[in-house]
Length: 223
Image 1 (tube, one colour):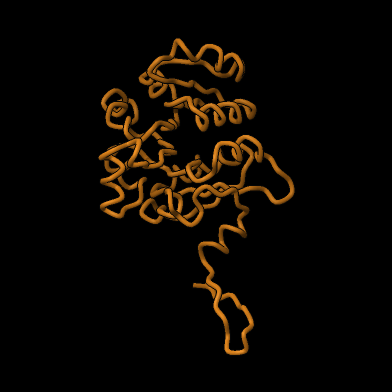
Image 2: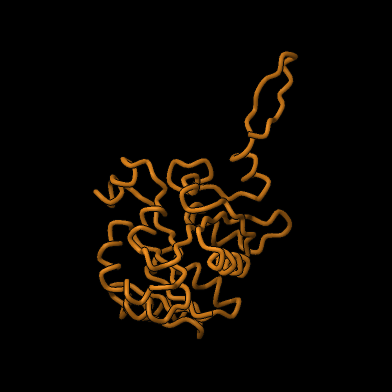
């Protein structure tokens, strides 16, 4: 698969490395693509560098791995190239960094990916690779046993199949959380944000609650 990666920070560059190992072709990009030569060479021959617009054109699937505050500017350059494509949203709102765009999401109490989908109405937005920190993404890929799961959310069935393949190819186990409006646990402050978890650990955090019975035994109840 050709994968365009918009943003070449920790998450974007690590994903590029993991996917090229599995035979995918990637294009990393930034506002200053001429500064990416060393990184592209380090990742390998299946990685090239380009402008944000070139990455959006190149990718059958495109990753948005930029500060949320840059999203409007990026969309103005790339929207026409993203129509009909799967767009993987790794962006996390931070008011101190992203200003009004993050504040709007928090004030409206919506999942971050819902806001992204509204802005990219002609694309198939998937929320993934946003809740695991970059260090764990780099060091825990292909861990056996107890494979780490990457939870994701999507409204589109075809997009689900693609992101499941790409999560597997990166060395993790996909975990479908639900449609985009249910993806708040992946956002900052969410129950599974910032954690590297197995499937069973995700389910324990999301779907069970502990309570004390009359005989003081701790039990688990499915909610």
